[in-house]
Length: 337
Image (tube, rainbow, N blue to C red; front, side, top):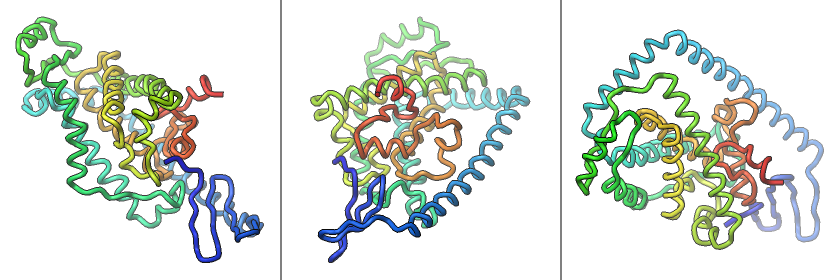
């Protein structure tokens, strides 16, 4: 369900909340918001802006400091990455062909159970709701397990029969694996990525996925049959809540995962980079559907409005127009007038 306003009714008074104004109406009369109320609303918004600005500035300073220290102590950071990789190489779970499918499911279950769930129960954060209707809809354990099965089944099937190819692994190793119809372990490169490779490939893969999925998402909205068949389910809700993130048809979910996988392959991303990519990818998707514009949202911390964030994605769910990129919004200015 796509909606532009939420209506709350009492016996004689109807209060209509819209994106542009708040009005009170009886059966025949419509009265504008008073000047005093407008002034109060303006002061509240100004106070929120100041609070956000201070927190964001402090966070940006901390992040820049961490990046500088990472550059200065690059050798030490590289040592930690090397140690992590050699440890993972000895892990049976990490070597399994099903690891990335399991890990993605785990990250989604962990993030959505911690981040949006906690937001809902911290009362002082209610002022950061994009709209009063925003909430957290609880879902039963059985339903969540069923959704996890629906997500993992097609991916696990592909994991079982497709040989995973990673940069840094000799082609003859892949040939040996093709001898077996059933794949149980993946051939991993012996060497870890450098710090620079990990960072560049991680950021590049996120940006490339964002561009690829823009064209898929835009097509799903502009073609009625595609929208009705594959994408309408994602917009079929009364209010926005975090579980909408995974309210997808099997086809759309596969297109999401395969687009991300293709972006990673384009950069020849190391398996460790892919491991870091998963929580970043899942977190950004979940955050877009929280319905909260919190001061320390990633879209606030990264300057110049580069990331769309929950506000613009909320507007996409309300209006069904614009903001087709999952994370950024520059394609709107290029393709959409």
